[in-house]
Image 1 (tube, rainbow, N blue to C red):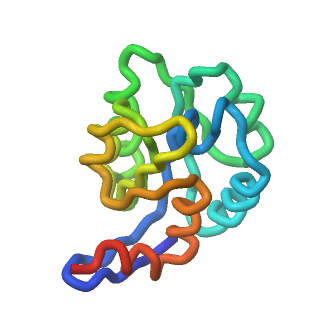
Image 2 (image 1 turned 30 degrees about the horizontal axis):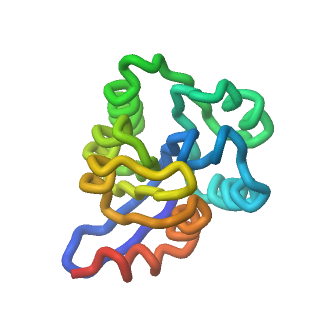
Length: 156
């Protein structure tokens, strides 16, 4: 569990982190060594989920040794499926991390939404729905591992 007290807001308690895979967690369908190490640290604090339409067809093989929940979605209803997945685990205790238009509903449903604008870019609609925007997946995960950074970004 990650608990964050943000001045001017209610306490944020995160039990689940839901990652979009392609463009967010992975670049061109691949994870960096640093990202794998950070996920290993993060899963000691929260339950980690990866949810993907698997654009490159690499998610299952890439994530098989991570020890996290991996869900592959149908591409035609990914946005609605991501939202339902977050609701299933308790939206008020979930942080979602993504970059695409199909992450907007997930962002709007989650207690905390972090957008990653990395090598594959990001959708403007997702940007408008995010609570925090970062420029790398490593920065996104580090926000959760060092919650004082969340406070610095979100306090009034």
